[in-house]
Image 1 (cartoon, each protein chain N blue to C red):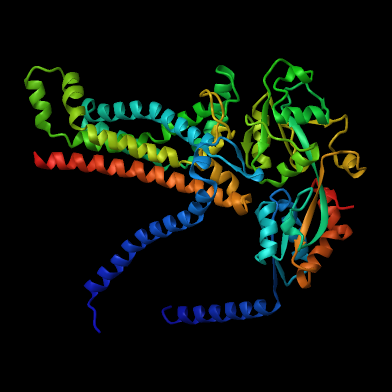
Image 2 (cartoon, rainbow over the protein chains, first blue to last red):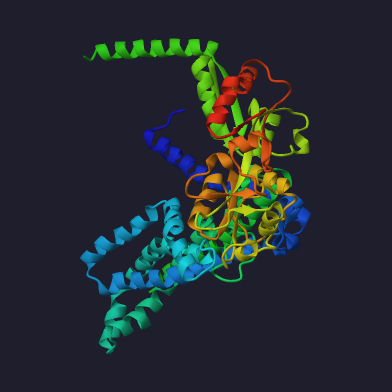
Length: 288
Length: 266
């Protein structure tokens, strides 16, 4: 058999491309294999809706963690989404190109800062501030939401900027020609046209916020109960897995894998929604 | 130059191969795994041991007491380390030796005026029945309880020694002695517990029932919150593992343990 260089390289690239998919499949299979039997044994209702998490007493209810993850994520979106979208609009519509070329990479640099560093700043600066001015233990849902809200900014800004930049220039010109002010043209035409891209950026950021572990462990306080106010401390799904994996055995370990299944499903759903949203936008634009 | 490089490279490779061949014959490798609280002490002991006895390579891994028991059972580690008051049933088939003891200190923020707590007060604080410092003679501030994660050896020992604590759900969970210390150091209303070897100036240990948690007091066996540190082996230890355990139990090994802030086995 004789292969020329071209086919060899092609095959090599195919193997590399497949290995990424294979590892995703292997991870999925492994988590489900370990977690699903446990869920069946304990019962889905018991597992998801009981708020009693005492692994050593055989109580495995992850309801408080689900609530905590939701609170932290939506809190982060409440802070990150307006800032991120406003930033993206500003960068695209109100700032000269040259300035944007400096600012955008700087914001994207934020994505390269390790989450431990965010967590550390949260513990040392943010938590004491919250404790002193708002009360509570400081390590709280609010602290986690603020830290995550800042961490997801690069995701929101860079995808939203791309979506807004993809809006045809003729839309803006048309709006201005009809007598709209610059701001009217932006919020009535440009943002509407880029809406699905902006939504996709927020959903991707949500996926990132749900999955973030290190920074959340450091600033959320990890109390395994349903939080009643943003100043309460809470333990997210990811934090539970990371904190307890090292010392978990038997049922406890399986319960953590089952928690992984829940996370996996949540993130898959979020990512699929984002993909569909992005695809719809591309479809719309290419039709016109 | 072009002709010299390959020769030099070949020589180096030969030398390396020789060194490796000889070390392959001579070296015995032991792995220790388990308790993160005892890990730094095990590392120090291993270092000293290897300095005296060339030909033995010791690797010390953490993971927690549960991992120590698991890896001793599965044979991943020759020696498992566990610091529990009571070994779980699955550890029954392992040979266990107490190599050191460890006091669990209860710490508060230095700004807290509290100096002493009774065992009952400690239990009620950690169970959430006492929620305000003024109920134990302090200022009118809500107590922030800080604890270790479920499955931690320190937490299991602490809860058992105080007497079956059912931890309050409001407790903040941290996953190491170091982060417990930082959390208490940063929060004026916090209370936590940790191995007494890692107490620093940033936190204040309180006396329990009037007894201080210091090496001397623990050695006089007056302090209540003391747990043993076990070395676990599958069957009686043999070879290099036995030599190492003997070294740890020798006066010299026990002295190293004491000097670094832990309590000797006996």
